[in-house]
Length: 341
Image (cartoon, rainbow, N blue to C red; front, side):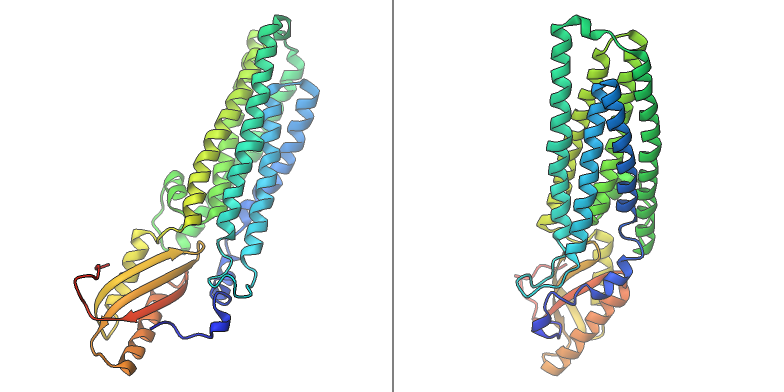
């Protein structure tokens, strides 16, 4: 027995109410990151062209990749809100997760692989031609200033991501937690991507600034190339982590334990429910949950069961009003094959 609705609208209306709620918090971090990365990418490209710094070239590619990533995330979010023609019965919500996985791929190949390969080429050239170790301190000073300015802009982007993460935890009545733990547990693909990008950007800028600073201090261009190499390796490591996270969301993750307990409590305290036999949940997006419940009711009566099902659906929605639920409830009789939730 399932929630009553018009089959022609399956997968279409599930997210409508949530879209209003999502617009209160969603997308600010992505837009802030895009704006910051456009400015940073232009500054880094100019500095890389003027100075010939390997670290700055790696950072330029990194920022260009980040700009592409934000555009992909925004496109995925926009596509996920489109209505379907029935080919996707539960909507297009997972387009966000697919976009995040594409971002991880872009970050790996466009950012990490290219930056690493260019840095390795410069290192080989310096080893083969020792004269290339001599540096132009004035040019590298310009690159170092750009690194500092970029760090300020990237820090602003990360600040916006942290602010949005805190707002989402408050909105869903979730206890405050550290950013790493939030990143591990969040079901928001776009926010997980932006937090990872901004964090990698700041770490990369640290390596780039360190390489440029050592090159100026020791008058050896090799340190600049090593800084660029470290930027590329950081991007590769971060992209693998992001691919693992977004891939897990794309496959389908259950709700968090705290959320599950609230759902269990709402179901088991509903009048007419004797026992919760089984329950499965899947996040279709951050705010959209597919919930399948099997319960034993007080009476084996169709009319009574229909009324109980309606009460269960209302109880779950009242307990977690910040989520949109697609709920399927099946009355049944307990047996050994049932797994208690």
